[in-house]
Image (cartoon, helix red, strand yellow):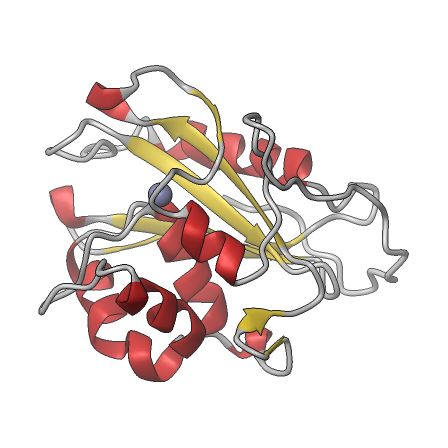
Length: 199
Ligand SMILES: [Zn+2]
């Protein structure tokens, strides 16, 4: 994975494209999140100092089969999301604003936010947002250890603070509590420029 920031202010991230033999599904994204988690957890300062959490969220665009992964945004990445969100990821920013999750410098951002911001602020999102949502039924998988509040390494749903944002942007996810879940199907897109997951 790539990283930005130093020490306890490090954020890890990665973009890639699903291999053609993999289903475009929440399970697949959770498998990728698990791979990235296992990479990050061995690094110094992988866990947040406040909650001892290490979480990886992976957002996937169905049409391009590209995915964007992020750990909990800290330090310079967190600050940039707060500073540039309005302009570079306006749909995500609008939802965060509506839920009072922005601060004067950065915000209370989760791994889910990191993945959404990084995708929406990249050229990969061009033409793939509209009517206030992310188009074409994108999905998200989350994996990791939430730390002190709910210790243990596991598949995670977007957390209760992120669910309203994820839902409002029309992103599918797994919700074991009977909420909306995402369909699983192959979309048959040809993967000429297939890229391996490389962390
Ligand atoms: Zn969250």
